[in-house]
Image (cartoon, rainbow, N blue to C red; front, top):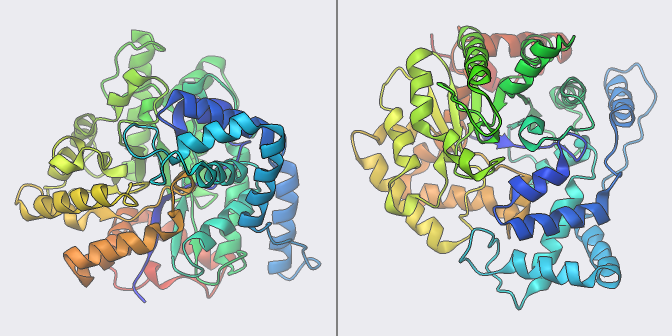
Length: 479
């Protein structure tokens, strides 16, 4: 079976990010919908997300058992999501009927506004409300269970490699997460190691290797405070010690990829310091072959004026300064602009023209559940791939789900199958295999013998899971 990689997904829970600010201001474009989803989170999961100590204990027990040095670990199956959602719906129908119906109407509204998520129509509000419940309850689960749900969501043993993205959003949302980034790194490393040993609940095929989140303003703050824990040093440690294979950054939280200027939240002096920190990050990642994924869509900003901070033309300047950097512009600029084949998707495609470059894009959370969007988007891709100036994008486009953010969308479990079918019908088997796995393998550097990212991960398998190094790390390597 051809290699399958989900290059853009998430398995964080409510302790790992400022969940109220995230739901109100980032996850949904519509302020009213975001506020109601945040209110739903208050009702359903407040204080329920398993803490660091509790989950660490579970993971250590599972790893000890996997190594044959501990007693049988008890890992109860997570509740059936449909049954759990139905139970919560009935409870909320009695206690919060107005919130429930309001959410259902907004979630199921037909396309027409940025908040519209479903095709059902406002008259069928129940399915929309249940989607909102299911989405919110994910934030209250253990990261291990969220990872297992991710695997099951797209069919057991369908994906070889998931690369969950940790995120650092606290600086942009003026709030603190309950778990530190170091604690998140610790927990996700253990989940990754379980997958390496073939002991991840729910799969015998899938491996999990995460990206660490980074915000340059967090590093700036740490330097000013003379903190013992420096975020940039943690990036290095996550990559070199904990087996992380990339970095996730979020410019619309309030900073530009390069050439920063004064903003609502930064002075000109701070902007200059952020630029210096970013150059330190890019230099390290270029030298050590550490890929970077960046949010690149006009969405999910800490402020609407920050949406433009994801502009691919800014990233073009980064690539000029750091030509060896492996960069993924997540969401490929979004599907909204693709109908006219203009805007950010076309700009990204044009940047892939240099044959020795390393710019990629993923399709995370694209709204292909809407037939009109899917039709226009595929037509735009066909035109893009047929033009000499942008044809190289075909080899650089990667499958990514953006789960569990995708979980708010109708029929999200069909995202992989639907995208595969659409792509195969339009571009054929070879191009589809490249889209579903081959391009991501190149982005990660796993197809090159001399790539340091590949070498570090091979060494990690030899140390922690001897005899289980996957073939996508060792076979068909380029010099």
